[in-house]
Image (cartoon, rainbow, N blue to C red; front, side):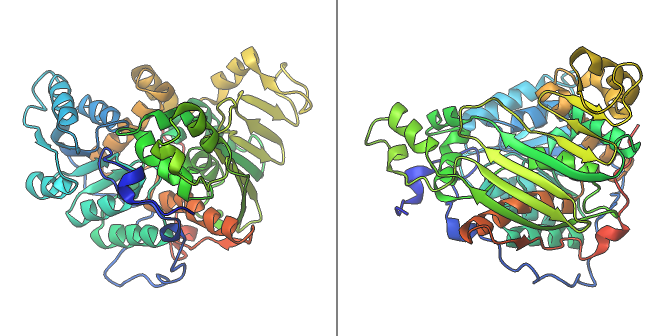
Length: 465
């Protein structure tokens, strides 16, 4: 692998320029945290004291951050107290935009922090927020979440939660010690179809669950055009230096909740993983950039598509795929198979052994297209019915607005979050475990139990009304 200076391939990003090295991402200390300290408390089902007014800070307003900022600012009982980013123009822009929200009254004292990679720490100590949205590059997610909790705030982190197993353990230990939420914001769990499938699984429509399929297949080669700022300016280094499933949670999160993984019924056990050859990124760089461009100096090691198989304690299987390079349509697969039928996505379709009303007689043909309307009418999730009218225009088909609404609602009421810290850790752990499996020619990798056995006492996520 070519040795590349950090500044050669990851410049300033919206919020850091941390180096990416394959060796630093391999999982370590799988069993180093087997005992929970006596001063710590398990966070499954944790309910924080209710907050009447929630003081909110945001770190990173380049891509995902502005959405979290404006959506939360639009909700009653919130006050935006600080915005932090490397770039002054972004802080100024989104401070001004936010001040217009909430009748122009609630968000008038926003402090801006910019110009240095450590300004976010100054922000935490000076403004003392109740919660912090972290929407920076991947390498900063865990260190920032850990410090946010140490400073007494709840952390809400973009995906993935961390890059290696050691970081994930530190996230868990800090959350348990400080008694603060740390939620990885998997917005896809709030999609209409994902909520529909969850409701149908909970009602036993497809019987006992056997197998799932999850993916993030999304051609993002165009992001390589973002050389100095933006997602491509730092993700490109990950594609070059890491070989595994780098982004598993969008597809996996919903399937894991269908199966009640890490919640009383079942848990992650092990995975195997293989990657295809690495071709697409190098070819894209050759085609779109000068020969002496830094993207053409990278030795792309990450396979264009990675396939992993997860095995659970109950023996269920989950196919997990990742591909941000190939020329193919977008898909998250989103399939869940049971003893009485199968629910599948892209396109959304259902097959039930005993059929459905007069639309189908058996499972040999999909219920799909216009016929899905009857299934939505019968099985749409109550949460979707309650919030869809107010969140549909919020981004990603409304899932972003629904997620932010639920976060704020839970903090106001002192309720348990829909996604706990352990789920974020298990879902994110697929990345480093898959990298190790690929490096060991597909050898199985065991999941660490971030709950230390307490998942057996954690009730499944209920059907929230």
